[in-house]
Image (cartoon, rainbow, N blue to C red; front, side, top):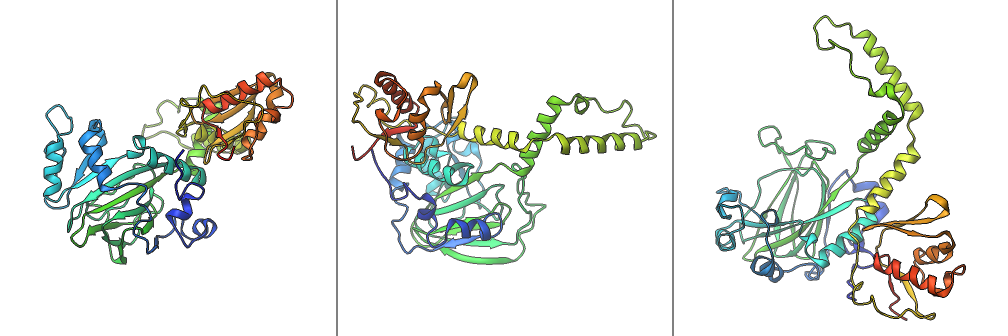
Length: 398
């Protein structure tokens, strides 16, 4: 199975020279960070222009899989699609020749390497990670000045771009709070730099920016987007849980509340009572665990090698290990059974499998003998189940 230089620390590979703690304390959701690596090939294992060529030429391209952009003159979707909405590949190449940027949204959903990289970052950040790919011809700009509604890490694969960062118009904009050119003014430039191949820049959401290719080489970069859950999301879920238990939260607003002569004082008192009830009834531990489980369940599972190894005999001396960057949690179910919450679905085990399941999730090599309370045949079936759901893989040294 292939290994990558970022396999065990995708954060360090992306941002050399800053520790995770330093990043989260000083930069995260606060200010930009420009990381110079002096290594043009640093991200070459992630993507290449040849790979983009292959995607456009040979891959299935549903309408949502490709977009194009150009600052001047602007380009519309009808310029590079057929009348039925399908991608016109010839028109895509032609407009790229004429200065338009090719954008491949969510390419990690169709590319194994990018998917694996996203999984590695998701384990570190506990947030959904996505990729957008931007290929811009020499001496062109895909977008005018704007901000994003999610934090991004821009990794320059090849070529180079001149970046300008402006003042921050909105602090932590919510998802969908989009940039409006006639509302948000860029203001003064607060930072300008060149992003060379192998460099990375972190841009928190809400920070205005733009970028233009420079030189005679096309620019290819991967934008890694962080789609976060906010404290507001957690509070709303907590309120929903309280409303399920307390019928007074589900009462309708008073009849006539929109009338001009409506007496608001009684409603204000009722509202304040509900606020007090919410503070007394909201269960942080319950809602937090729900968010944790939902996050882990919705991660893309890593099934690589599952089919090819499905018929491999599992012997008493066979050794296995938890997959690198796999997301899995051990929970107690009903009737003393065990549940591993993981991407791809919950995996159920009988209570006597506890020793072996804990060994499987520990990160250390384990085998049939670690299921000390099970017969060998039952232990083998437990290992097969863990293999099938992508929680473990065969130990590379065994």
